[in-house]
Image 1 (cartoon, rainbow, N blue to C red):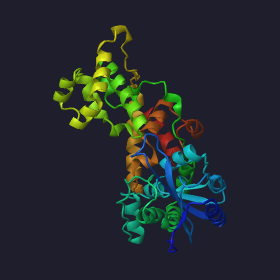
Image 2: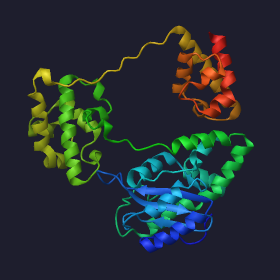
Image 3: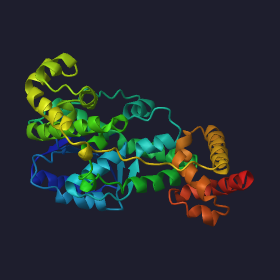
Image 4: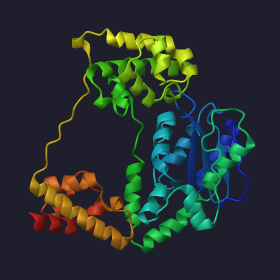
Length: 381
């Protein structure tokens, strides 16, 4: 682990020195802290990076730009270690345009090794007998100045990752699973945050349970969701901290269209009723007045029923997977997930070449288990 005190980076001069040190390191551990629980538009508030010797806590809110770091993330000669990389990769590209080459995800590695618990706390306890304190996990990382205790907490998330990487890669090599992890890590390095492609979709599409509503209730939910979004944006708060999804659904179903009815419904707190009552009643009243022809409908997806032979293939492949996973002491989904199994069953590949055309499969899966899957398909017809 890194034993040297962490260095808090808040000036361009400090960042330049940090980039020089990071650029010389063969392995760099990375983590970040963001503020999604406190603001309407989330942002990266800290980037923690550690080598064998040094730990840097980089403050993007204090720095005019982070362009110097881009070369570190893009350098294929430097291994970048994350624990649970998906969210971090999306956030770093969204906020700073950082592409990440040669990524290694220690959380993913733990799952390939069959760990029953792969959280950073559990893994550090297992490998180094370290008790990681997560008391600041849900704090607002956008506050400035940051308390020293929070900065030290952030540093602990990367201090052990270089050593952990070495131990996990050695274990993966012993089990001949390192290539499995590396290929999957490469895919994770390509994930990106969702763009505004869905901006034109109704807001109710983002609320679980909306598909069960009738047309009038759906219209009510849309108007309420629009009010909540506009309010959250003005207040710079996450929408769920204005009104929860469950409360929006309940309002859309009960449709209290007077202040008295709203208070009597018990759906919102007294404080929420006092703050937003008139706007909510207006939104509900507006939805109730919409002509029937203008009411929305929830997009329905029709699933084609699988044929009996496809169902037999799915069952046979799942049986193979569960047996093999038990032998390897792994989570079955790490070998092949249900989506990929269904793709194989429908496409019915009868050769390895045909199996390689199943787009959702990774090379390591085909190379390691492809012949067994083809044999299973041939046996089930």
